[in-house]
Length: 187
Image (cartoon, rainbow, N blue to C red; front, side, top):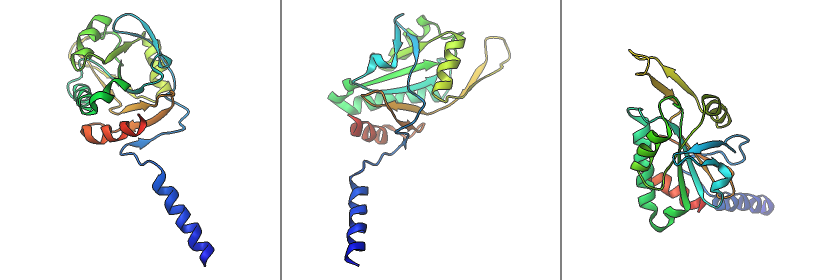
């Protein structure tokens, strides 16, 4: 009986010492590990360029009417809430609309939410390859004209830790507080 009680107590203590996240813990995932895209300044970037920082990656497009601006605004609030720790977090916006989201468009849109945010783009093929690596769904929805389409896409964001490992999938539109709490655990 004493032995059983000791084992149960050890299990409870072990569970208490493991960090609990507000968002989906994807630690150990074999996806969401790398990309090679161009940023809104024209520089080629990979995930390795951001090692040493916690990275939040969101896939969207600049003409998105709701999910994208809401997510970017939420991430700007997260940075403000992090205070001095904000410099240890990098937010990346990867476009799933390389036809319309040119370097110039991304340079206007992405830093408009926060000057530290980086917009990334690639060719149609590069975008498809990165989306597949990150298990991102996106699909063009035709509009009344050739250029007035929308894009259905995954609404969450990935968090990559300082060593480049995927750690969390952030739920859309939850407010800054749960995200800030999770990011602080990774800082």
